[in-house]
Image (cartoon, rainbow over all chains, first blue to last red; front, side, top):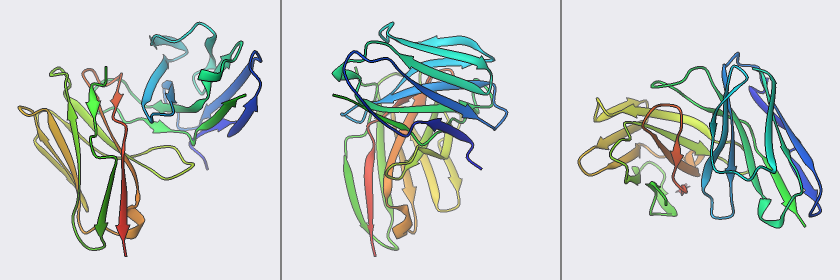
Length: 114
Length: 111
């Protein structure tokens, strides 16, 4: 059983399109995240939700909009895709906040914008 | 500004020897640290953590050392096995919620 699953795993799309990446966790965790790993391998947090409430919103273009219909799901919608959006996007979840926190990652979604 | 740095992009070690992966951080407020392992085309998986109240944490073949004064931590793997070949990320936080990751060190264990 996959603990944190995200779809699609690979996505190639043209500039200007709108796309979504879906994420689901079956761990019963309260907190979910989206991370981006760019071409330089930096793994940076984009958003964090706790019980469907946004708690971390890093400096991300507002073309990126997370949506959490329930605490087991956190989807990422991207409008007007740009070449620089090409990256690997990781969904993640954790049981708790604060010390002792351990983040569980999905397998990643490879987004290529052409 | 990269607050967590892993200055060695790659490391090769003979099977059975010790692997030492290093991580430096700049923010003195960081007090909770994680190490992750990542295989190609997979997400990072949690290995081991340490908080600043300790200077060492051990889990089987994996030991993490923390030197707060030097703002440095290291992950020791002994003995190294070919299955340990992966990219290793360290991550740091000052509140346990928002983690800053290094760029990873690719470890190759040579049989």
